[in-house]
Image (cartoon, rainbow, N blue to C red; front, side, top):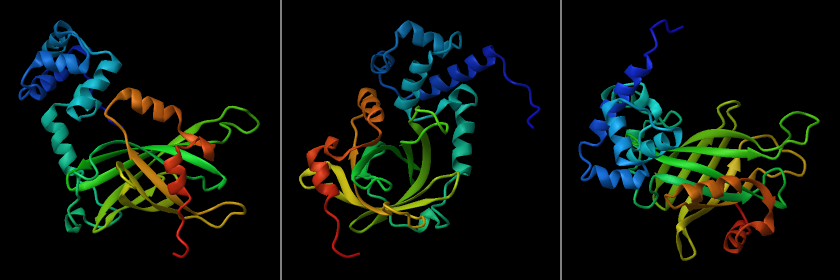
Length: 265
């Protein structure tokens, strides 16, 4: 148990103000920054001076713009950076410094959505979302799944969600993804190649889930991923569409790619 006293609101406001001033140190124009974030310049000055907190939606946009997390409310920026350096990830036991350098320009950090054939309902499609980010020398994946299962037995409420984590590994002709669900260590092994036909923001490949064979279910599926624009509205629309859906509800070019299963493996 942590017995250290919790900071009071005034201390938290000052921590945030100090961190924001450091983050803004190399910003060419604070006024332009405020326009990009969508906050009044006078109100932003109050955040900088430690006299006010941003609303949750404003804090989200600040964190997204500077690529930091909500720890900027709690800890000095240099301490957050030291913690990040100490927690350099290792990809499933393989030291990341020995891997082939990642071609980040071919797979930029950002939000993505993907489609595959549903493993449990092969006649239907599944759409999910993933955040891809770089941490040190590692390329990380955090996926978000919505399960078409009742929240409680006997109820009609659905859309239970979960997250899973993984590492991306650069290969000569594409990249591999090793991911797992933290609660049961079930793994997915996926390979993506760059592009889909003439669409540079798409990636196509094949995905395998590590579990026992189930009647009327698959463990292997083609998969297609798309890089989403850096717009919250696009993320929200993709999130609302997440889950199992009719196969013909998927975009036609994605349908065609999902039907391209190799004749032999």
